[in-house]
Structure formats: C-alpha cells, structure tokens
Length: 406
Image 1 (tube, rainbow, N blue to C red):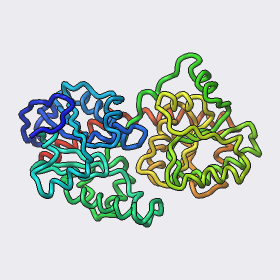
Image 2: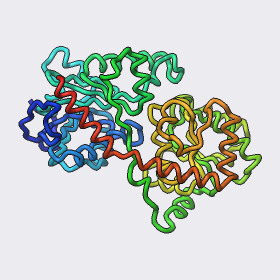
Image 3: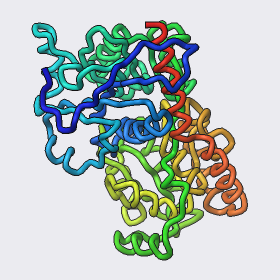
Image 4: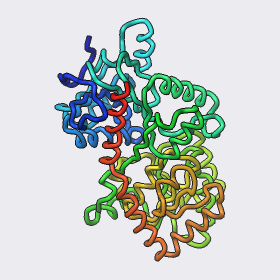
C-alpha cells in the first residue's frame, strides 16, 4: 500500500552486497528527509547537503526521501528545492510523524508503506521511524541532551535519552560527525567503537566563494549594520556561551569602542538572559540581533565581519566556525570538545569558560590585524579539507558495510 506520494516512485531490483563487491552495485536507500525542510537547523543543513552529495558520489544510488509530517507541510514542501526526482523520489503524507510509530504497534505500517521497497533505511533525526525486515543506520550528533551536561531540562533529557536508546537498539550501525562525538557515544551508552563510523561534515561551496561587487555593502546598508563588527552565528541558548561572549565583548569596547557585536540565529532556551545582560551592561547600541537569516545573507554578513566568535561550550562538530574559516574570516573558538578537533590550527582557540581569555582573544583579532590575517589564511586552508563529497563517500562506505553484515 502506498500512501500520499508527492513524487513518482522509483522501480529497482535491490540486491544484498558484500564488502568485496564494487561501490557501483545498485543500491536503494530510504532516508528521513524531513530535517532538510527546516534548513535553519543544524540537522537540516546536514541532510540538505548530504543528499545531493550522495547522488553525485554514486551514480547507481537511488534515494527514497521519507517525509511524513503534518505541521506546516504544504508550505515547507512548496518552498523547498528538491533534488531531481529521477533518482531521489520524495514520499510524504499529511499525518503527524509520531502517528506512524504509534500505529505500527497495531497495524502492518512501516517506512515502506510510504516509500516502497529499499535496501537500507537511514535515520537522520532524533525520531524512531518504524522499519521492518531491513537494515537501518542512524546518524547521532552528540550527547548534549544528557542531563549531566547541564544544557537541557530534565524532561527534555528524559525524552531525548529515551529516543536515542531506542535508535541504538534498533539500528545495525551508527554514523556520527566527529571523533569527539564518537567517544562521547561510546562512553555514554557503552557502545562498541567498531559499530560507529565518523563522517565529518562539509562546507557549503557558497562559503568558499566571493560575493559580487557591492553586494556586501548593499546588504549591510539595507539592515542598518555598520562595520567593524564581530559576528556570532548560532541559536541563542546556554550551550552557545553567549553570556560570557557578551561580557568579554563589553570589555573589548574599552579597547575598541568602534566595534559592534552582531548575533545571527533563532531564539532558544533561556534566550532572555542574553538580552537582559545587554541591557544591564548598557551596550544595547553596540549589540545587534538579526534573527535567523538565509545562507546567502549569512555569507554576505560574514564577509563584512572583522571576525567570527564561536566559543561554544559543547559541540558535536561546530559548523558555523568552519563556515567562518571557509569565508576567510578570522575565527575565535573553543579549545575543547569537537571544535578543537574541527578547527585545528585554523582558528584562535580559547578556554570557553574563561572570560578573560576570551577577551584577550577578541582584542587580538580586533587590534592585531597581522595576526588576524594569518589566522584567517590558516582557517581557509583548513576548511578546504571538509567537503560534502568526502562526507558522502564515507557515508556510502557505512551503508555498504552495514548491508554486508546485516
């Protein structure tokens, strides 16, 4: 039974593969595509970039993009640019995704009800899609949801931990996005390291490019933004460490009063503390929040910045820092967790819990332009190592190894 398809189904004759078979064997993978319809979120950026890279990496790969959801469905689908349907068919139905899991307990409903047959299912989000009689693989990004980390509420932690445990129990293999994240998963859930593959994320080619003549100045004038400014990209939530950054920036104003702090990102948990601190410090005229913006605008604002500050307390990867590095902007980031692993020598790394060290780093990038340029050049070289093509090929290896063992 096929329900609610919005694109034609692919017809294929999948075969089980072995490790000694060539990568060109026909393969049909069903993949939870729903996050790609929400590109402002980190997981959405991952799925949205991974899918076209997978199709380019293996011409014999067919993707069935699972998209069963209800909230804002028509608008999300209408506005989204899907990959060519010849090899990536989208399958949707106007019902809440959680209903599928609930109904599957009593009825013979699974992902195949919507997508048709496939060789393997790839869970990309923290949701348990019912899959019957097929191997499955899941991408898990970090362990920030564990209560002892201190970044989420007890109820959020309980829910997320339960979902992750269900995913771990139901999948044959796990993908994660850094060696740091792999170690966290192994320690938290007692997993066999051989059951986890690391596939580093890539940088959208947009951030490696150059804007057209006058485009940056035009956008900055349109939104009323005056250089020089320090840019922050990310959700306004405690884990992103904005409170310490604002305090360090307040100190920077004593040495470089012409600077602004520009914040780009959606409101998250406890975002009020950010605005309250700005008000308490009396620096409202020097701090500008722009909300969430599309990538093309983010890129231009990045190119107009003197520096990017991303001193997050905990990341499974840290894509905003890498995007700043790719754009050739000097980046200040954290000397711990995945950011140290990803940034390498391409950023000025500081202790994210030390406001004094953060201030000194900001001052260096603001006042020592020779050092800032050197860091920016190293960052751009480092960012070139992270491509979606590499991520796709490593993901395909995980797919085929999983099928061989299933």
